[in-house]
Structure formats: structure tokens, C-alpha cells
Length: 196
Image (tube, rainbow, N blue to C red; front, side):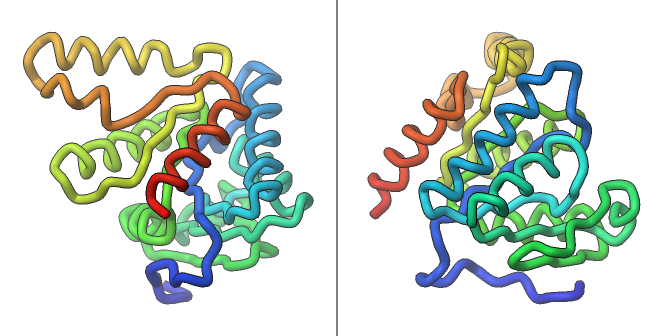
């Protein structure tokens, strides 16, 4: 890696890890929500932790956060530098050897996890932190931003897994779904207050 992963020190702002698509998606509302999320992180004085790409929703959230004055912490694996257009003008830019290291560094340096619309990568990231929470490896809040109901099928799948006996009922309590950035920010504020 080009830099060493570190746990967020006390002087580090409240850090929100945002998982989201490296594509913009079909609806303009997805990119609008990503932009609003970046702006909100800056307005709250928080730090954005994300995958260091400059494409799709990743790029939208990062550019908005930067423009509004937020600290930005990006982590990208070597093999995705060209594809995701590694955004090197971040406050902190880390290159990892692989995806596993990327996810580890992002998780270690965040206080809360937010999942915006995205594809297989975002689902992988969500299920990893959800599983870690289920087995007691962390207690960080996890939020799904379900813009235009994007995550409704995922919620239905998790309900199905629970109904079929492959996960405890408590699984659905390990994350919270919100419909708007405004509601998400309010929920993040509340969770931060509980921990301070």
C-alpha cells in the first residue's frame, strides 16, 4: 500500500464511509442524492471516506464534498485506478494492493456506513459490514439510502432470508433504511449523539 491504514484519532472529524456505484445509474435522482450527500457531509463538518473514484456516484459525492469544504479520505486498489479514475486531489488518497485491503482501510477509518444506490460492489460491501455486525465484530451504524425506493428489493431479500430460517430476526435491526438525504443526516446526527 502507498500509505498505512490507521484508526481515526480523536482529532479526526466524524467519518462517514459511503459505498455507492461507480456508474451514475439510470435516474438523475441517484446522482442528485449523491451530490446532496457530499454537501451534507461538508455542512455537518464530517469527513467523507469512500472508494477514491471520480466516476459515477462515487465521483459525484466526492466532488460535492470537496467543493463544500469537507475532508475527503479515498481508498482505491491498484487495478481500479484507470477504470474508476483515481481521484488524487483528495485530502488523503490511499492505494491498496487489492479489494480486501481497500474495504478494510475504509472500514477502519469510518464511524458510520452509508450505502447509496450501486451494483455488485456496493452489495458486497454492504453484506460484509452487515455480516461483521451480525457476528459482533463491530457496532457501527449502517444506513441504506433508498433513493426512489432503490433498496426495496434488497430489503425484501433480507426478509426472505429471515423468513426461510437462514438468518435471525435481529438481522433486520442491524441496518436502517432512509429515503432522503435529509432523513439520513438526521439519523447520523442521532447515532453520533448516542455515542458521544
